[in-house]
Image (tube, rainbow, N blue to C red):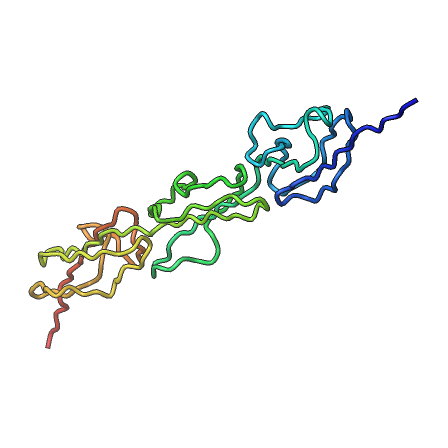
Length: 231
């Protein structure tokens, strides 16, 4: 009697950054078993005889040694999976800087290696404008990517109306910037003195403090009669 050993095939596995897989020896006709490897942010799409992953070179579970594959290397093809990334929104301070703590943050999911744009995740903040120069980021496998979105503070006009003295002075201030209520008009009214700033032209409600509102505002000078003295 003659006895013949089955041919043996040594297969190594290129895991492309995944967890290591030991070489394996298959006998002729033995069914292929999918090796187990993991890579953060990815899932195994398949194993291929070609590093270019052409469809004809794919080796599936159950394929037979000596028929579908022989000695050589099999290459894993990774498919990205959804992972977390964070979006942080920062509103500009009055002095033009940005705070270290975001005004709002939220966590989203997107596929690993996806480039996410700030414009797609912007929100609306009253008195602020989205900064279109906020850079995009690439979603990282470990979920550590942070998309920073900035918003510039709007400017509005505040008008000092001089009332019966005639004239006005308009200044441009940042949203929520304090209005200078110590400002005194350069014009005067005969026999009267400047008596403060008011919210209305009839001077019924005095302004004691004022932060620049959305859309700006106008405040009005009140002129009071000079006191008379009897000698």
